[in-house]
Length: 500
Length: 89
View 1 (cartoon, rainbow over the protein chains, first blue to last red):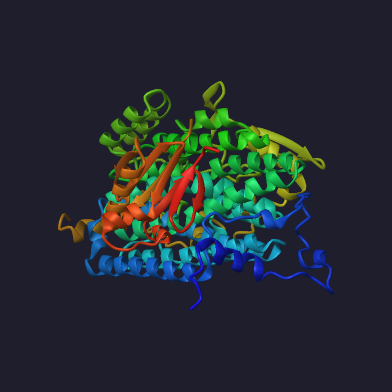
View 2: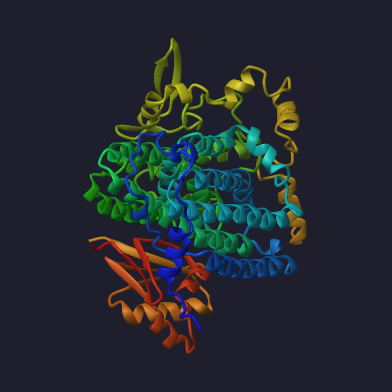
């Protein structure tokens, strides 16, 4: 009987011996995008996947994870556990997740299937292909978990249609479309490294831990199950960075530019997670600032200290990013409160206890900049004058977030505006970080599909807001949107709980 | 000095892995948060097959760690005997 192969041998057989040389075709024709970005690869055999996962092990462990996960989904549904969440306000974070994040998993699936074909090295190709299948699994488990809530709460219908059209969902959508329309190495630096190694931790770890604390075992379980794949994906991200930096010194400035770009874009995207943590979890685990310090500053700090030996420095504007952790959740939730009539979920004024918690967690900023707004909103709501903004916000040409972020360097009370000209037209950005990104690739970002511009050009149908929300976005107007207070979701919840 | 970290789902299987990590990694900090356990340590952290098996009283494959893993930080190295994270070179 043949001796049992060890892990390293099995991995070597899969990732080296199954590859082939091109004898009658030009290798560059087989991998047409490999040199497209100016990245120089001298020896693909130096690629190593530290997890050394092979196909037999992959199917075995993924199948076991699925069995555990679906057992919990079944238990959750059988136990009527949608009635045991902490507070129906919580479900609005899950609506954001379904419309804003789940479609990104699908984009990741497509993106990794594409780049998994484009690399000349078989180790990288296999790692990307396994990741592609993982991402498809995440889409499926997330849709399945949240389909249960669709039976009981508003706002879960037609999420993929909404992802393609609704104004604020252009933020996550454009992030992935920017990455997927880049070359294969930039895609990996954007998604595997910047997004997954550092940024998804903030969504899938502290937020999911919070979901558990709010009684949502279906969500925490798909979140942790997805993140267990992310651990492998992050390892791919770190491996690709080290590989690129070790292959050729000319790769260093290219990789640094991508790190600067994608960390900035990532921090903008995460503003929505910040408000999910600080405002949408009724039972709170930690503040956004605390999570940021653990998973961005500490974890990312260790990472960049390690990469310094290659000549890589921390992402550009790290000092601005450090200041924003005290502001971004408040600014994002305020934007949604103002536009709560055009959102696909409910918004609300934090309770007095929640305002006190925010004051305690953000002692230097909350009372000074944000509490007065909520006190005013509270007073207006008490007088029956709940406030909604009637105008359309200016959007940033790059991150597509409405201009609501402020000047962190010297005046956090002042909205930050930047602009740049390209071929005689003026374009607007929210920050120096987004302006730099625009100036580096103006020909790409002038093509951005900006929802506000499209609405004003008449491309989103409807003669008024209600028609547009109903016919173009396909929202159930009056049920999916407006304040949590007085919503059908709230009324049903109180009836179920015997309180109405 | 930089910390590496490993987070596992807080379940019955992880209990044995955490005990093995504590036995093999002096000074490791174990933090319990809702539904998860986070372990962190300066420079390196190792999960050893033999120690987990001794805790568990049955055979255990290092790759089974994937079933309970949530996230990690550090350079990964895995073989048949151990899974390790490190920032030291």
